[in-house]
Image 1 (tube, protein in one colour):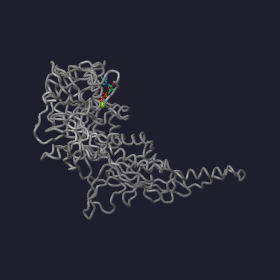
Image 2 (tube, protein in one colour; image 1 turned 180 degrees about the horizontal axis):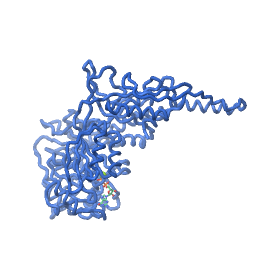
Image 3 (spheres, protein in one colour; image 1 turned 90 degrees about the vertical axis):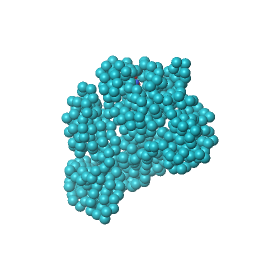
Length: 596
Ligand code: GDP
Ligand code: MG
């Protein structure tokens, strides 16, 4: 297809504003999926995507669309809307010339609407503002058309109104895509350059890499090179998804499609990397490649220790399709053998744990999420600490923690309660901006460690679910942080150590000692439970001793009953963990980590 007849666009929106549903209607209206094979969220292929109704991996499809007797090829890229996957969104945007900015006509602009819009503007995309769900009785298109027009400039009348559910306005929207979004440009005679915006693992075909060709041409059997790693591969197949894969004779300037090289690991096809011709390579890679960074760490342990090999294998498998997942083995006194895993964010952690449990039948316990701290010791060595129990001992001269810039969009009535929440999390208000009559965007700089735990839940409950949150990395800051340890009879319980701000250390110590006192059964001797910073005890509870004799009740007579009791006690012992002399049921550790 000639570049003049191509339009590359994506749909950007806050989560649940209807991207996937609108994409479904487009597939139907352009005739590439017939009514019989249609199912909701057609492009969301993973089970977990369907069940949660969220898009995790981007997808690209090519659709024919006729305007005034001319047939155009529309390449639509459906992007994930959640903060954790911003990197994927930004790569998808870089593959397009335009974006449909979709806003729920009953909700208006939300935090991720803004975050995605800013990303699209940074990529110089042509923006088409659209109100969705106008079939809803609660829709208020007048109000929100004005809000959108105020945000991006233009007139409220120019904001298109559609319903992804009924299909109303969708044909007009596709006409507008052809009319407004510029055709791609590039140099057809230059050495081939194509940007990888997605790569997925397929059990049968290996890695499928989605690319957007910028210059030159890619053809089947050509030898290609990945510019960041210099790895070379032969193109076994090249084609377009429409929405099923259709092999083609090549992809030229402006085209979007897939490549198959037979590699088995997505790390060999990195999102953001540039593909070039091995025989005639381009001299310069396309801009924008960065390695996604793990921001949240957690230890994952099988509840049944014998599942450890299954967990290892499951992680190896997931890694094939998710380059942003990383892990290494770790052991814990309390939880046994497991893995310390790094995630892009909390949703990513949740999704991976859920996939491990669901797809591999594992029962897992995850330790409290932690962020990477830079810790400098007296001898001027700096280490990155992702597991609190590996915090260096001895004198610490400096600790720095990651910061994020958070945007919270909320009805203005909740400004007070949000300020209170953010202050309690050491947030620093950077500014506020009003949208329309009643909505405010509050910008905060806030330590990531303060929001990974339960910030989002608190935000939602304080605002009856109305506030939305988006955040991006914003460097690091030095802080007064300390490690709090929890000791049972003087022995440290690694899984409970936490790195917290000095002012919050006491509260953490108190909470954990009280919680453990309730959970750990009495022993034959007294067990002190302490919270400590280094050698200094900051909180203490005591479990008093009992004499436990399970046979006392059996009056000597019934031997089989006695034996049964002893066996039962042995069973129980298997699930006990020893911390020094103290026996603790594993359930107690799990309950303490989960909180209330
Ligand atoms: P995404 O997260 O942006 O991909 O949103 P989805 O397409 O998954 O839609 C979120 C929810 O809104 C689903 O329950 C959809 O059925 C519903 N929805 C999407 N579009 C419309 C629409 O035009 N009208 C109505 N009434 N509901 C819609
Ligand atoms: Mg979706």
